[in-house]
Image 1 (cartoon, one colour):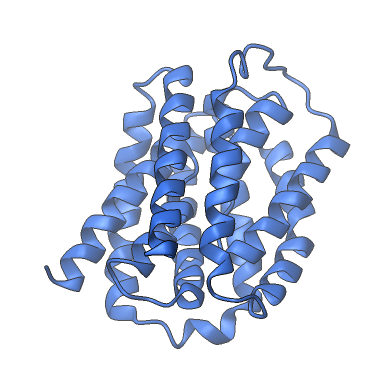
Image 2 (image 1 turned 30 degrees about the vertical axis):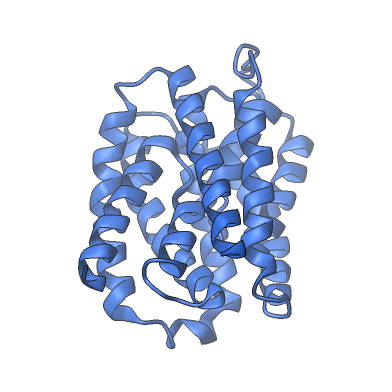
Length: 248
């Protein structure tokens, strides 16, 4: 199977997930770029940021038109994470390559457990405490920089279970957070972008953008509780794949 076909197929699936769930794009993109497409973990995390930043920005426009973006919360959440994202990205280059897949798996399992907790969305509220949003955003930013992810797979659980947003608002708002955090992390990794294999990354990104538009329409037809469950299952599946790949 050719690398081009794999890049297009994987990109389309990841875009679909990102557009529908508001996260999970990078936690799926990085393993896809490492294992079937053959990028190194460092190159894959950089490429994942490129893919997710562009795809999230494209998907954000549709969710904003639907009124599902909490701009104030999202901008505060994202702004608090910029500094930690930059510091985390700088630190990532000094970590052993095999640490990244293991860290990915651990964080994915924790996030899935939060999303599967009964009644996590039942107490959704209209007002969010700024201090709480800033603290959650800072922690997410640090994770974004270290793991090379946009943060949506953690932003959605945080926005729902920590800040009290409803699932559809969390999906739309997380895309804003992902875009800002990804771009911030890329400012540190800019020197590694030129070394990427663009014959893989470019079609991957293009397919992801197209898939994200379809994902938004699909997500609009699904109940919020179902979206949470699907999101959690995807995270658990990725965690298993990452652990299996690291020990293979």
